[in-house]
Image 1 (cartoon, one colour):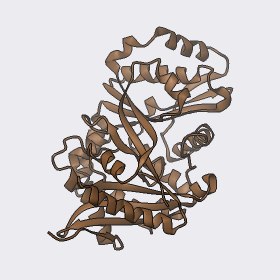
Image 2 (cartoon, one colour):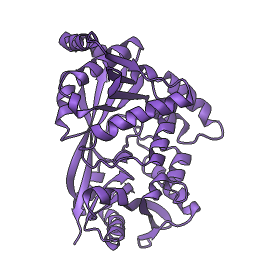
Image 3 (tube, one colour):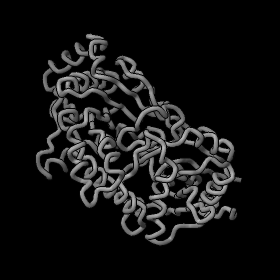
Length: 378
């Protein structure tokens, strides 16, 4: 058996191998959902990926006997440095065989990259930012992840522990079923009705009818988001290109009837955004849109009975006044009327006590936990 080698990824062909390496770790895992190959290649390409406007990254592949047995990225983010100080680097896109030596070699390569850029701490996985796929799944391996969330082997957390990493923060995915609608306290719907009767108060559905309206609605959501999430763990504002990428991705799978804006006297004060669980479709096409996968993809997205409530935000001056409760109650009622069976609300960071307290009023369970790890670098 040849010795393990960890080599940097430099060419488009090697990036393709980096993306496809994930398949080898999940051949017998019924709950893994592959990435869209074309999308991930574009995202990792320094000439095309939106991250590279403000960040620097390196990709590494671990091989043994010519076969890929692990991969990892390492990156630094100048926008994060501006907000939090220049001391933290990151790793992401982590996949590895069940071997502490392989994991240590991959993580060592990532640590050396960020250390060479002046960092004395490393966090991850974040691929590449806090609003992309994040964390190691540490609980909830018995079900498929929803769209834009990840899945990994149960031994991954132990590999990181063995390499000297410790918990930084946990993020939770909540799950609910429309069959539990009758378990919702009627007082919560009464809160919504009382607020909607106030002059100038309304909850309106997103208007995605034209490109111009999509752009307008996106700008409203972005304005609320930047203020409402500014104190969230690890928050880094989107760049214009990152926001454009999100808009393009979300508008294809957004559910307008379950996405809305709350206004008071014509001023937007809160928003909710829900998307169809496209993972059902991606799993069927095994990550390949071409040559004919997009037909199956579109059909499956339209027919799914699962959706992810991916973002909600309320301006700080309007919090704890029932706005959050009213929007959650609206969501519950609408998804029942539309015939959805299951929903996920995610991801919610463990120290977001305001949102977690609001969710306690509804029949939801934390069914997946994603952990971000950290390590101090000497």
